[in-house]
Length: 453
Image (cartoon, rainbow, N blue to C red; front, side, top):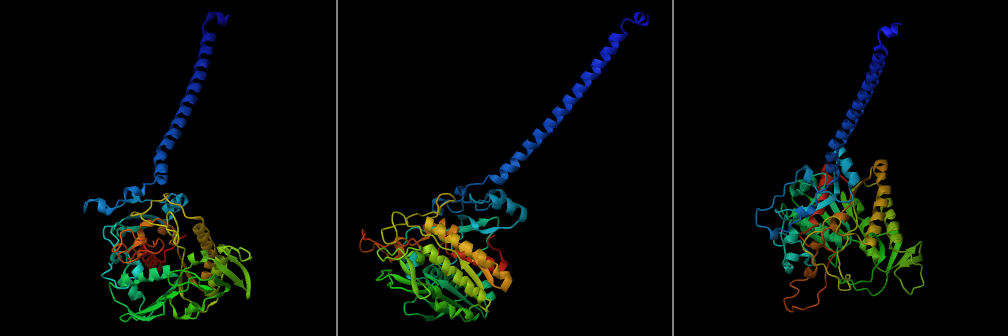
């Protein structure tokens, strides 16, 4: 038989089939290994990029008190990979890297060897309580920091350019004593180009007007701590003889009557709403805040503050006068181991780093109300031509516990008695000091129209 004539033909045929099957198996295995390696390689290759976008350099490397270093020993240059970010801005980082936009109000404080624009000798507009240099504050490290926003450079304030822009214009700061603190900072910076003439002040020197004759520029500060109508029974030292009577449906005409005179304004409120007050609406007592024993409904400061902001933004929207308005958010204080009236102190000499301090609940509540009401009002900008910009100084101010007068709100407080009991000021700001950076932000928004969100 044919099969007997070739006894190996069947075996050989089977051997070919086996070899073919094994070859297919090996090819499949090799392909799988190749794909697997390529996926693994791709993952390993992308990991550094992911780490680069999420890893942040601690600002601690930059937050070095200048007095601890020899002159010229610090390198303040930051490249792109060294730009410090705040811990709560992960979402922003991705957006900024894709769009190239910056966030002026999120960032950190970095050393600045150039120091301030002015001193207590070159500016005569500094109010006594904020003149920390003259009053004898012994450290000076607080003067050598600048605000470093997330994802962008913040140029220093240009006083000459600002005055040229403000030729034949008027500007007002409307609010409480922090607004007065702010306007003094601006005056001191502008005085490096032109000195202003004080042309008006009220009896208590709380509201003032200055004129820059070479530029015909008028600068005002209007003291109205609630921005709405209020009967206040406090002396100049804050000692109260009766509860504040606050009218939640009536704006303070100290600023509304002058509103049409201003081309620009910075409006701010906040801290006074934490005080004990009786609330009036529609000519009746609606309730109160902190009025123990009065048999009135406790409505809370947040109720009154929201009402006030809505009234303010509604007035701006309805007015046919189109001023350029900045709304500045609340300023946290830095009292430790007590409050203003209970022995609180502020002895720190360097800024906080992001994550080292949290805002108090009342400040968080206040700022949330501000942002919510501002967002509602901001829509009016396109609808009615209102120019309304947010000046969100809360977070950057929170990081500067070292910038307050503290014990040195008085002239040489321990000159006569080394153990004297002295009032600490952990709310207002030394001049020069961190508040000067607020004007850098104003200038940047004004010139480049850059803003938060």
